Image (cartoon, rainbow, N blue to C red):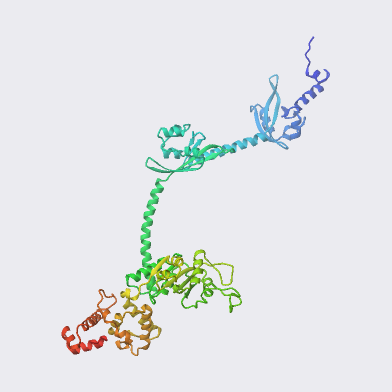
Length: 592
């Protein structure tokens, strides 16, 4: 007895119907997850399972070209035997499918073709991601290999994973000789003297090293790479050859030094031009030094203390600093601390709010500090500032804020301080009349302006300049006689430049004739000081030969008068006649 059962009997179909057999095979292909479609040699669909029907609307008896026009040409070529097994991607209603076309043979004769549809959406996404990552990997490889800096990549055990061509060139090694080796072994083999990788693995932090290799100077930077658990998985080391950069830096420093030299020369020329444009008379070394210092500190924000006797022109230095500073377009407020009553000095400097004191303006008043905001405040005669005001000035110089009288709100002002005095501040500090801390705050950059006695070279140019200047001012024409000029050169000018200016204006205004003679000079000036009438070691370049001769002649006469009591003895000693001596003494304003 044959116990085997055919498929039809297994599903309960009778042995007599082909339709039941077709239903069996249809149920079988419907149970498959992939799509199955069969066509005859004419392209008519003779079998389509549920997946194909739902995705493409392909039913039995429909021509393949009507439902899948993109697939039909491939199937047709396969039916004609012009192609082997073919794969093509087609788009379904909701998904993409990869279709494999295979011949259907019966007794070695091709009777159609079978198309198997496999959903490929996820496969395509995976393929795209793989392609993206492959492209990214190639891009990273290109970047690493193209870098001019050397790159080393080591694992957590200090084994070399990779180096780029720049590292090969910098270290004079080949990749195949070091990749896979441990950095400790490379150091023991004296390939390297130090390893930034080992330092990173030891410290767990970023490391920077400066190394020398075969006459080359390298900067090595090693950075750890951590996993999600905080463990080091890789160490990336970058190397930069700074030998050429170091050489270029030295060349730049040399060029900078040369440029600074030229700049200083040009600055000196510019400063001399500025002094000429501002009609500042400076011939003596001491005065030139003071002016150069003023022009130099004008470009910074430091506090300047201008020292010197009364009348030397300390205010002129303040003007010079302001004009050549970055605050030139901002106000320069000048205050004479000795000219303001002590009871009003604080309100004038720092201002006051409404109701600060009896008689105060109803809306308050800003002080000089607020008026000079953004500019410069010149405190002349700073030694006369009362001690309470010194405290408030010190507070401003420490934190840049002031407080009006009667106010509780500090105000921030941006003011540069210039101060000046003719008094000895150090002595005042010892006497307790000036605060020591304020003194050192003010004396950041001291500039000493020389007196007129210390700048003899400037005396004659100053006299000639101011005679001409006041003559133009008063629209007249005046000039000095040689005797008057010589007498003025012998006068000590205890009031310095201020006295000289006042005297020149007086001579221009009060002289009746064009020539200012010896008789026009004030008695105290004409009398002079014979002890000062000595020939200078070097005459100013601006003096002519006749002026030098006359000045020397007067000095000689003044010196001879000390030894001889009368004109006759003086004439005999000098080898001239007595009338000549009398005429010259009168000319130069001297007497026996």
